[in-house]
Image 1: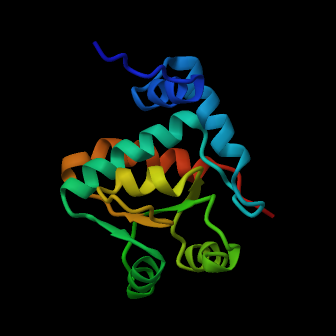
Image 2: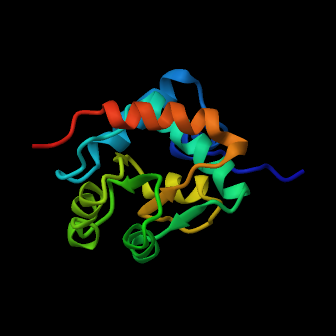
Amino acid sequence: MAKTPKKDKTEEKEEHEESGGNKEDRERAYEVLATRVNPIASPLAARKLTKRLYKTVKKASKEKNIRKGIRDVQKFIKKGERGIVLIAGDTTPIEVYCHLPVVCEDAKIPYCYVPAKQDLGEAAGSKRPTCCVLLKPNESYQSSYDECLTDVTTLPRPI
C-alpha cells in the first residue's frame, strides 16, 4: 500500500485560505492586502465597502454593464459615461494609472481604490487581473449601486 506524502504547513495554509478560511483569516488577508497598496492609493475602501463593491461589480458584469481596463475606462469617461470608478491600489508601476483620479475629478465621477487587482478582475468576471473598472448604474442592482455610491462619495478625498 502506497503512502501519500505529507503536506507541509504552507500547503495546508494555502488550502485553508483558498477554501475561505475563517473570519479572522479574511480580516488579516484584507490587512495584508491593504499594506501592499501604492502610496497614492487614497481614498482606500474599507473592508466592508470593498466587499460590497466586489458584489456589485459581479452583478454588473453579469449584466455586461461595466468597463474594464485603463484605456476603456478613460475613453468612456471622456465620452460622458457616468458611474463609480474602482482602481486597484496594488498596480505597479504607479505611472500606469496615476492620471486617472484627476480625470475622474474633472468629470465629477466618484472613485476609490480597492486593495487588489486580482480580486477586482475576478469580481469583473475575468481570469486576468484588472487595474480599473467603471461601474455603471442599472435597474437590476440599483439599490446596491446606490449604497456603494453614497459610501464612495463620503470617503475623504486626498488633498
